[in-house]
Amino acid sequence: MRAVQLQAFGGPEVLDVADVAVPEPGEGEVLVRVSRAGVNFGDTHQREGSYVAERQLPFVLGGEVAGVLESGAPGFECGERVVALLETGGYAEYAAAPVAQTFSVPEALSDAAALALLIQGLTAWHLLRTSARLSPGESVVVHSAAGGVGGLAVQLAKAMGAGRVIATAGSDDRRARALELGADVAVDPETEALTDALVEANADRPVDVVLEAAGGRVFEQSLQALAPFGRLVAYGNSTREKVRVSNAALLKTSRAVVGFWLYHCLERRELTEGPLRDLYERAARGQLMPQVGETYAMSDVARAHSDLAARRTTGKLLLDPSS
Image (cartoon, rainbow, N blue to C red; front, side, top):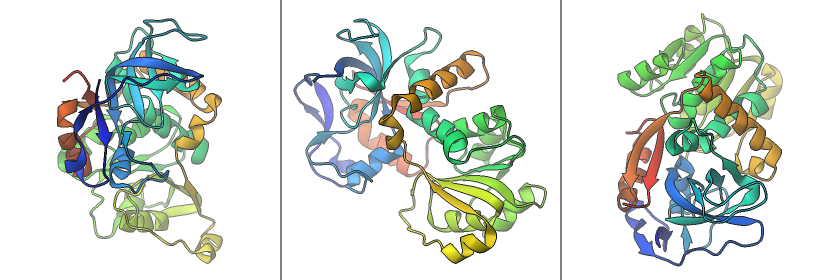
């Protein structure tokens, strides 16, 4: 089968399509014929060898797929449409996926829409519910609000009862998109005095919740915009800039910094099945619009990674393994 097998760590140039054996599902696994594979920012870290979890070469990239079951399993039938979460192996024509992290796709949702609500939807859901513990009426800052996670987080924040939702995005078009998704105001994250801009956008009041995935200056200035008992949830580090947080400063301000990595939810089906069902039901009611971006041919995977790293994309990026 065709797959993107990583033989060396590096830039997008190391991504090549290779001919590899179809995986043999082990105990507790199913074989999925992949129609679409999801592309995530974490994949770029894995490609570089800088991911949170260390990977041993060679391996096939990709942590989420949509497709059709090639074999049945308890609770599933052969030929059923599913999405699945896996540690690696998604950028391929076939993927072995754990039954515990395989989920049926409702008839009303396309494979692309269902996949757009898997990793990115679950991330947005847990950022607000599990990590930030959002309360009704609280203000929320969503950075990178035109991206896959950010676009869903804007919508979910409103649906979950947030007060003022403040989006940031790096261009006029992307800020306009965030407003279309329901943000009350959109701010340029490159603004030099970002702390002041966020507070001003919240009617001159410090904010309650910040969802942050860049690190560096954005992290530092967002932290300073928090109100007492405010929470900054860090779920990425796209700038690769590490930040030190003073325990004394947290003590004096009653602020909290919370880390989130979706992998910890994958170990417990109750942290994926229920939230994913909620996401799919919200989408079916029209309360949540999946953010489907460009679909790339698998042979064009290097361009997909380059576009994602350069922030030239919006919504969920997908790979078509048949092309």
